[in-house]
Length: 204
Image 1 (cartoon, rainbow, N blue to C red):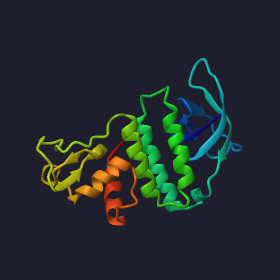
Image 2 (image 1 turned 30 degrees about the horizontal axis):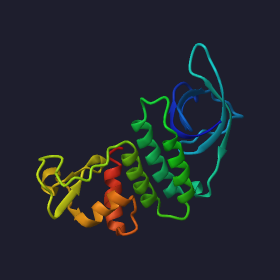
Image 3 (image 1 turned 90 degrees about the vertical axis):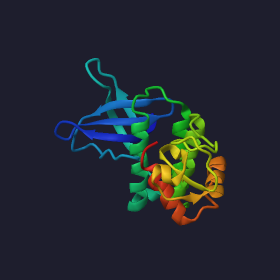
């Protein structure tokens, strides 16, 4: 079985609880510590086996990290792990998950080496919003419900707002609407990308 490690939580000594996003479900399992066991690292793709336990969570066994070359780039790895934390929180109550989430991570992982990782994740997040039916492109501020004319800001989940209503910097409206509509960041400057990434970090 294969999946992406969303979360690793130390419990007793060096044992840990591990949350893995597989193709059609999210797996919570227990990992016993052992000197011969490879380290389990958040964000890595894992090949593994599960041993069912009647008394507790299934035990994680026969693990092998399936590497991507960019995992050796500390900055890219930290950005990836930040996204894993956000996704783990977003899917925390989900057991059976749609294949969409696993395939999205597969696509992102392949792009991470050659493309700007912030752009990759921002485009992925728009796809998540679309898939979940949470992408809003209306011209009303989600705070005051007033019409948004020229000045626009974004809240968590990229909800549209007046800058004064949400207390955030204004963004170029046409560029933002195009980004939300197309899930492409090609037309956005690096400064806008950094600002959008900070909004992404507020939560999925």
